[in-house]
Image (cartoon, rainbow, N blue to C red; front, side, top):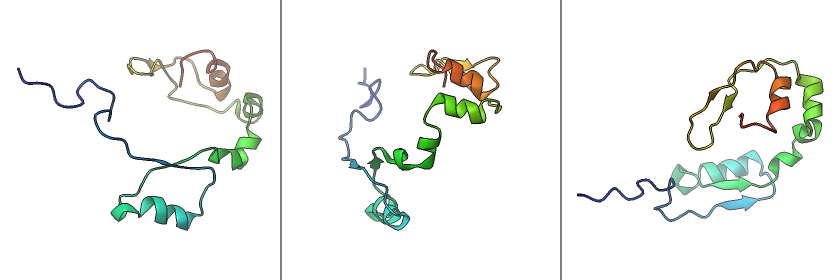
Length: 113
């Protein structure tokens, strides 16, 4: 029989050489971001990871703990919470989870997302 195609039953992209990804500790201004990461490489752009970029955002300090989120948003309605989706995608929607409070009370100890 014919051999399977290259990469078959292997982790996605493992058959191909990786592309170096730049890592930055800062967040560039919009013009630099567009020029360096969106419009570069003939318009295809290039990958970049901004390590710790969210730490400088106001939300990171305002909502640093579950308690802070619960105080402000605990009664907010939510939908579409899922479980058991790690690799098999065999889970489904969580029943009777309708508020952010219910989600926050469960997400540290269960496999919901």
